[in-house]
Length: 157
Image 1 (cartoon, helix red, strand yellow):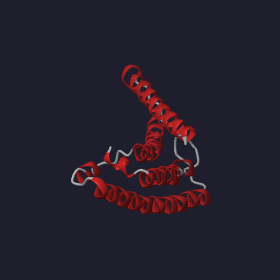
Image 2: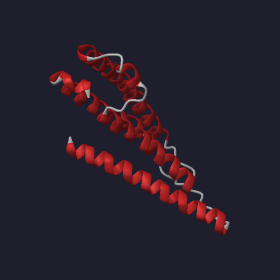
Image 3: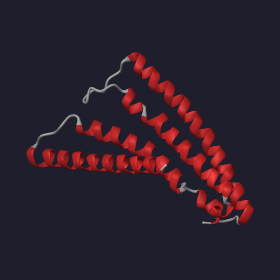
Image 4: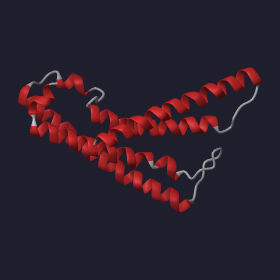
């Protein structure tokens, strides 16, 4: 699990850094030299897609769901643990749908041979972020649920 965590963190950090550098260079080129790279906006868009989906798995790993804290504050003890397990199960169902339909999208893209306009890479590389991010999220949700079942006091943190 530690290797997976490091890989996710390094990937997302590197993608954010790369997108920031490309954006900065493109802004400098556009405003100071009246030049523009045609591929920069496309690269940044695709990097943000990968950041979002791999970043969602990091959020599941760390237990930082948007909006769930409000609901969790109303419960304590076993109620809080039960609610967290329920949320994890619902999240798992959603992630399995994302894996299935993301995989279908990747396979469709592979079969049609679509390529991106500026970067000229196959679009399935962009769509691959969906099932891969969902699969990583499933791994983290299952791990968090396992830890929660072993030690219900973790839901109190």
